[in-house]
Image 1: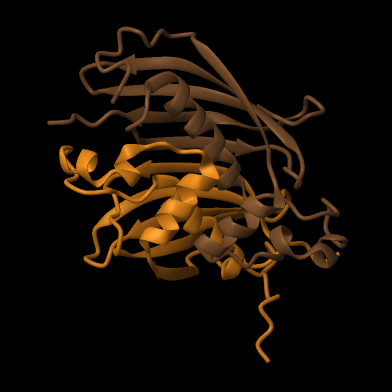
Image 2: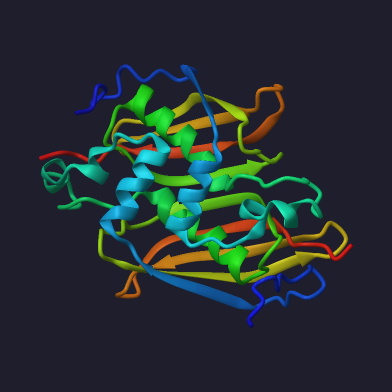
Length: 144
Length: 141
């Protein structure tokens, strides 16, 4: 059996280490996410309105894409038990319903004394276009 | 669709507050949507051994409350998020009532952007999250 409880400590993570995750974003994801977040945004849920904007069709909520980054960090790197402390993000292009979004998280700095890790964040679509870039700071788990 | 297409009614220093009780349900649906398996959100037994002792919310999902507040009550529906910068200073537990105060700090009518700062506090008055984000209003033909 594979144990997913394999989170790394600050001592164990290596600068330059990467992880990624992909998901095809469904219409269901978008509609459930807007309901969860109390969004009335017609760019997410009104095809006629969205068709009159520069995007041409409904787009995926930016924070749904953004949330895939801490999901990647929690699943794979540094993995289970890490706690999210800071996040900076820039949204360059939208994702559309049906796009397959791939995250990439890369360890770029660590502070063993403060138990902090800095992670570079990227989301791309199926054509390799960069949708989101940013940086996160997390506390990796500690082996007490 | 936008109440403030020309941004004349968006005034720097204007504030809006909104509060919501953050539930287990939202986190459980949210982690399903984003594919998050971190036990700090979903495993009560695991959490007994962590510094927080209980399951905690997903920071980015809590952050969304501020963005929705700014959009729904200040700019009007139909914005895109262009950037954010957030600090998550204390955990949000299931059942916590989180209040956000969103304030306009900058606007640029030619770029069609409005920048907000926000502070989120729990029912005990403790700050859980703070930061800044920028919304853009795309043109409609």
